[in-house]
Image 1 (cartoon, rainbow, N blue to C red):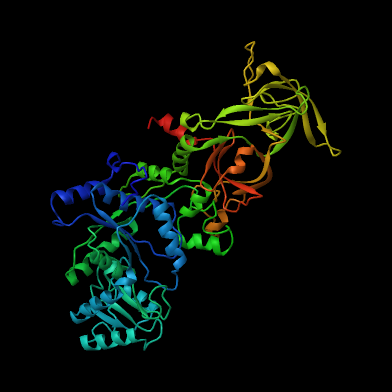
Image 2 (image 1 turned 120 degrees about the vertical axis):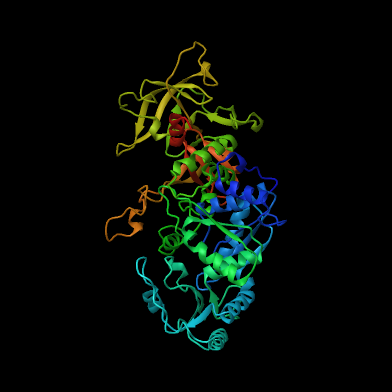
Length: 568
């Protein structure tokens, strides 16, 4: 269920075969009077990432469109990798995206029922206890071109299998010594049907059930049956599970339970982005990033900390739709939707990231004034604010050149430029330290140009942002860039790991930026456009005495240009 207070894109305007399939199932009454029921089933072994956002959007969005329901179900069948921390973070991320579940469920809630169903399959001669090791099972499974071989334990009697399975449950056997396998077809062209493992022995403490169980169901056995218990009508998952669909159906048919159906769609792949939870965990554990919510990470918590908004992510997910073929989406498309959203919502502010002091020699000493500026030109309702101006201001170091290159239109000796919303100024001289580095620029201003317009109509070619030096607050600025240096992070030389493609310049920290005083009141969750610089938000590391801002994105929008050129 979508939060009714949150604006969400309408899926009906997006090409989507999943939507068409659900509409047809309703038309033919495939599930009788049952309402459309979906589920989002993450394993709590890591934080959600942008790829999960697409699945969440489809699961919740399609159910909403057809007046159905969505459960949040944790696939917690692997106690060695799952933690309560991940359970909590997943719930927070789903809600942050603007969705609310009908029921909160856990696969572990169904362990007793799954065990009963396993006994049923044993009694029906459809499952057996196998003593082969994991390596031996792999060797017996065969290949895509060669059939598998029966396990020497495949024809145990029902009575022996029941006894062994109950003893497995009782904790009599060590880890890895026995498994329960479905008895299907060792010659099937689909390797997933070659007597798949249903249960393994694992003496590990579960985050919810504690030490109650020492046998745990495999994903393929637990997933479809969990769907059936919840009367899930449309179990949507990504294309890598397409070969598992026959097994999904086989379990349901053999048990004679509610006929949930699995449907596969393309997973989200983004350029310059790694969406493997195993690799993301490696980044965290090896301290290549600071944490799961590092703003360079593609996790939803990382994107949130960087300043991405749920509205932009939902709009992005709506635009890419769902297909039956995997592809790669340019990350600049996601960034385009984020810029578009922030352009409409972010308050403008002036900030000088690499400050250079500018002294206006003919401005009266001790005088200060205020200029009125719009909080957001895209939103007149956002109002205006008063920004202080004085004899000394900071400009960006890149906005002055003592020896300007050709076609350099910003400030240089003898050149006139506009200080945004303030005055025309002309550089006159410079001041340097003993080592020759530039410390101050001295200039003059035209008092008649207040507001940034000349009464005689003369034009200038550059308008620069600035911050009044006596009123400025100091802040740390963290400039984030792509975490990987190649569009395909998996494009590595032989013998190298994907992490060899990490971008060494993915973070630059500026320790003494100068910001207009209104930013002293910035709070977590606020979004700002630092004029001529980019979009920023306050970082949780900030304190009352030290503000820290993260760059969400620079202003340049390459995707918008591509989109306009292609006519899309």
